[in-house]
Image (cartoon, rainbow, N blue to C red; front, side, top):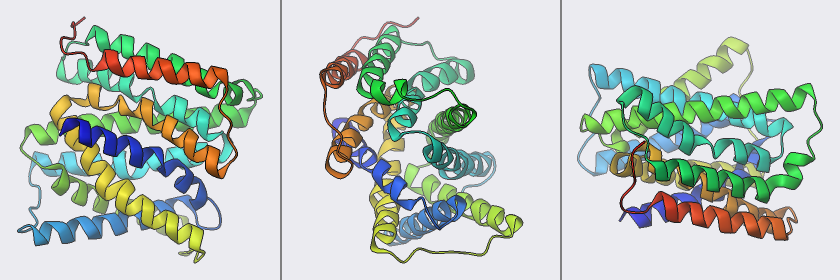
Length: 292
């Protein structure tokens, strides 16, 4: 079951980067994200009703859900979409792939969990592979203020994602299911984003083009309803450290999508990078990790 969830997350999130790019345009970033998670939350609540009812989180769980909503379904996507405006998607993916390392470090600090040596080795192999995969884009970045700002946005989004992982892990330890917490968290994220738009005084806008609507539907249903539920279920089963290693894999799927839609061409360096990423997966999931 874990392998199936892992594959689902890699395939779905690996194909959402192109959809994120297609949402950039006439609709303000905060509004696009709000539309995505409003639709996803509506679907999740409908599923919960059909399965027997909606359970409202209470007490400490409600606070954790609110923070998870801010981290996973609001602030991190604002960061990533702002980064995507000034950086190539490959470079953003390289930064985001460090989530596996951040998850391990934060779990060490917050939960006092030992860091498995295999996690560190896997992270090193995976990051090395991704640098080879995206080196032409990374090397092509001229040193400029916009580039630095984009890197800060991408790193901020990655840290928010990692914090959200730990919050989900804490919620599942309290017997809160990802389906329930995601529904409420997405509602929180939507309300905060709409509040931001209201404070900024921006009128609601919508792009009725087929590309935008298609991207919105894909990001909301497979990308959010299925992807986040599958991923956070993995967080509960494997821990945030090991679950996050799929963030190193899905950029490879994104590259193949880019080859179809954006003319990306595989090179020897890219193929070498792919081999390193696969080796990193083998190391990450060996049965007896050694804590350090």
